[in-house]
Image (cartoon, rainbow, N blue to C red; front, top):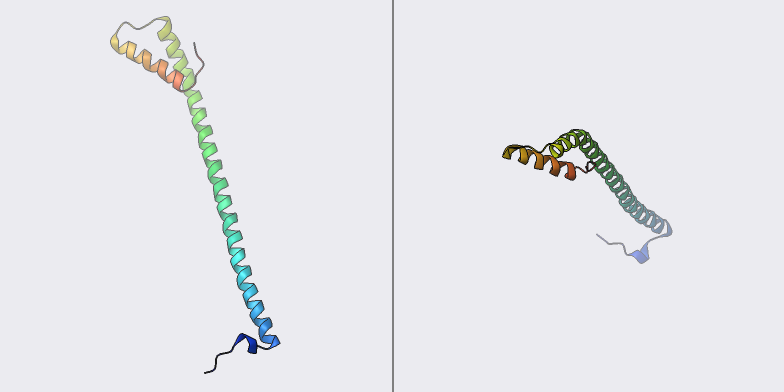
Amino acid sequence: MRTTRLRELTGGAWWTLAVMVLCMVALGGGGVVYTGHVVDRQNRAEREAERRAAEVERQNDRRWCALLVTMDDQYRMAPPASETGRRVAAAMAYLRESFGCPGP
């Protein structure tokens, strides 16, 4: 069996070889571009999901604020007499601050 050397290829064979190499390079480049596009879309979707989750968390915190502010204001106006009441009042004050509710 005789192997063909590049110098022995005819014009048509060179053309065929060039087209094949060009197609392989194009397919490889297209794969890289498509993969980059898909990864970018996934990253954008993840950022959007994180943004939505943070917004939901902020909304939930704001819903708790109405209750926490009411209870904390009451505990500040009339401090509890028992140790348990003082611990509850301290917890309400801490939660009010940690949720970012309006201060007294």
